[in-house]
Amino acid sequence: MGEIGMEEEKITVSVVVPVYQTPLELLRRCLDSLEAQTLKGVEVLLVFDEPVDGYREVVDAYRERLPLQVLEQAHGGVSAARNRGIDHARGAWVSFVDSDDWIDADMLSVQMEDAEDSGADVVMSELTMEYGSVSQPRSYLPHRQRFEGADKARFEQDVLKPQTGAGFVTAKLFRRALLVEQNLRFREELSAAEDAEFMFRVACAARCISYQPKAMYHYWFNSSSAVRRYRSDYAQRYIRSMEAIRGDLDRMGDREYCRDAYHSCVLYHLLLIAVNDSFHPDNGLGGRAQRKAFRDLVRTPLFAQSLEHVHLGDFSTTRKVTLLCVKLRFYYGVYLIAKVRHWQFRKFAGQ
Image (cartoon, rainbow, N blue to C red):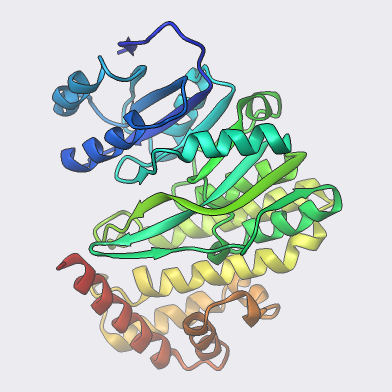
């Protein structure tokens, strides 16, 4: 399926929206927020990572009101869907919005104004985590900041520190010429932490990155999403991404100042694996077997080497405590912390 309701106007921003098994009411909320944008010249590329038929009613309702491209592919994952969107984008700028999230009406206009003022290749805004009836704004920095020249090294490092939010592709505006000229695409063999791997290469290639502390992107916490539900290949998916980032560092050769941040990235994802794989209640193992399997994982070279370079200041208080438990080989403590996290997931899911 190709273009639907495409208006003849200059396209400024192409918004790429991957869609896979998204509830209809959430997709409508997302599209409503894109239709409400105050910036002129916004096109939306809906990339269906599955047959479009179940969504045709929703698509038809918007095609007269939005400059809309509808693309369809066999299931290939979010990275493949985003790449398809980049390849079909017509705007000078590209934005990525997940289909169960939404954005403020002025987000793209504010980001475009910033881009024109700063000359940046990437503009980063803030996002708000939406936990049912609870909203939690994120904060990377307290004030506007331009990263260029020697200062850009800080942003490159922060991309590898997940708690900063710099490694997310959402809430950002990308100059399409940068993506095209540098052949920057998502690695389609990665299906976890693919944002951070892509953003690291983008940050290294960009001349200037502009940050503004205004939260305009709303990230919907879905307790049953692929990030949190049990998958038997969960650990391997994250390990592949960590190895890919290490490969990026090795190939560049001039980014050794990012090594410590890389170790923090590896350890952050070790903690995710602990909660969503090693100590997940659905992995079929008893408590003792879970702790043994986690101990064996920690001893693998990838995680053992990063534990030797741990920087606790890169982590929140809860994660510091968990990492200390790992360092001290107190795996029962990690088990208890994971149990608490799953209780929190169930609580949010019940709202």
